[in-house]
Each structure stands twice: as C-alpha cells, then as structure tokens.
Image (tube, rainbow, N blue to C red):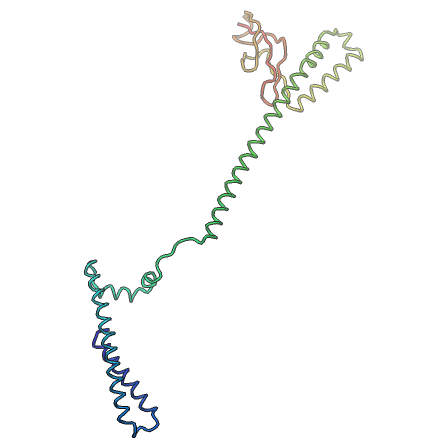
Length: 245
C-alpha cells in the first residue's frame, strides 16, 4: 500500500467518526459550531496520525528495500514471494524447531539400552550353553576312559576261553553281560575305532610296532593290540596297533 492510499484511508476514517459523533448529539442545531470545531480538530488529529503511520510505513519499506539491495534481491519480488508463500512467512515468524522432546529422547535412550542388554544376554546364553556342553563332554570322556579297562578285561577273558568253556553257562552269562555293556556304551555315543585292515591314521591310531609284509599294502594296520574308542566323533583312546610296510 502506497503512502497516498494510507493517508486517504485515514482521512475517510476520521470523517466517518466525526459524522457518528455529530449524529449522537442531542441538539445538533445549538451545538453545530461546537461539533464543527470538534470535527475539525478530530480530522486534523487523524490526519496527523495517518501521516505518522505513512512515514513509519515508508521508513519500513525503505529499510526493506535497502536490505534487499544489500543482499542483491528485488524488494517487490521478496514481498510477492512472502505473500504467495504463507509457510515461509510462518517459518520466519516462529522459526525452525526440530528439537526432540525430552520424553522422546529418554524413550530412545532406554530403548537402545534395552536392545543392547538383550543382545548381551543372548550372547551370554549361547556362550554358557557352549561351555556347559564342553564341560559335559569332558566329564563324560573322563568317565568313559575309566570304564574302558573293564571292557578290555571282559574281552581278554572271553578271548582266553576255549570252545568247551564258551559253551558253559558261566561263559554265556559273561558274554551276555559284555554285549549289554557295549550296547549301553553305544547308546551314549561310544563306539570302537576300526583298525585292522585300515590305513594308518595318526589321528585315531597309535603305532607301537612295524612289520614288513608283502601281503599287506603300505601303511596298512596288520594287528591291533588295544582297542581305541570315540565319543561323539572325538577320540577317547587311540588304538594301539602294528603297522605293515
């Protein structure tokens, strides 16, 4: 709005107020001179106020134009952009506020802490289960290793019997107990290591003798002196063998 338009608008408002005050007077004829004086005074006061407002508006416009010139922008383009973009004007008035609420920050902090603790607990649980399994396997292997000499004595006793002795009820009972013993060991994961006729493997066999035999191939086990055993694919005791060639 230009300066002249603002002055005209102020004058019209002053005239309208003066007319309303004149209409409200009880004796318009007697007080005509007084009302005209008051109207003139009111009009002059309103004109002075309008002029001061126009001057203030002009100074604001001049300041805006100077700022626009300093920044290299056209003041008319700036005004039109502000009128056409209410969001920009709103941002200019209220500013940009992207800060999170303290409650939201606390919730995010607690959520992150809970997630980390759950991950740590899951890792602890897996590590504990693995350690328990290893401890159980070590304990089982230790007990099995102590039982194996009993199995060896059963086998030596049965092997020392002749055919007549094997037919006796005592020998038959001993053989049944031995078979039951071996079935129980096999049920918990204990099985003997194959040796005679197999190729020598230092992971499973312990060579205590060497023999030259043309009938056997190279590094073939010719004889087994003591049985070896596995517990869940891990060696409890190596086989004591004699290797050919």
